[in-house]
Image (cartoon, rainbow, N blue to C red; front, side):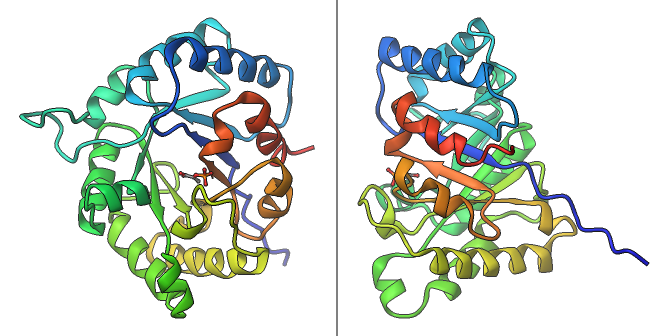
Length: 261
Ligand code: PEP
């Protein structure tokens, strides 16, 4: 009897603009990206995560450019509570209200700058799910942890602690982002990425009925020159891109690396 091979998850390329981008320049880049995307078939899912000030303008601009179906918008963080006295924070409900479909949680910069623990990240992911958002949950080891041979233990612990029990392939994406590769121009070898993603896949399959269908993104110094190699690694279903997502001309070749032809 023939065995059915499960369909590969639809790839996802997400851009994290971090604390960069002004209204005029940011929307101009989205215009350029939209022009490319509208004339291309076989696209991966594409998401941009601009700073909070640009989220709603980005949603409106993508609709005006006729690209809202092709490019989603996501926040870079959300609070674990749905509302309340949390000055300066943004709730997942508010992100959803303005048209976001995604939110990044547990980025290593937030873990480092704001002391976010796995438990805090898990609570944020739950809030995202409750609001109807897909959570992009970030994990990754430091250089010390890699040099100490602890990478697989660290990422297994992080994925167990940061991805909530109610996660599904539809509401959760996991991004493996080695901390030492973010913004440094350094990347792991394809074999190192394959080893970590195989572990993450096994952890997801062991824990969730649809674990094989979760998208596993690689993030950390992805750029035009290395995207094809990194995106071809087994169990890499896309990328989370920082610096190279700010300009459409840099981001586009990374999107192209996951176009199905
Ligand atoms: C990131 O911050 O998520 C990231 C991957 O950054 P960069 O691509 O600039 O390394």
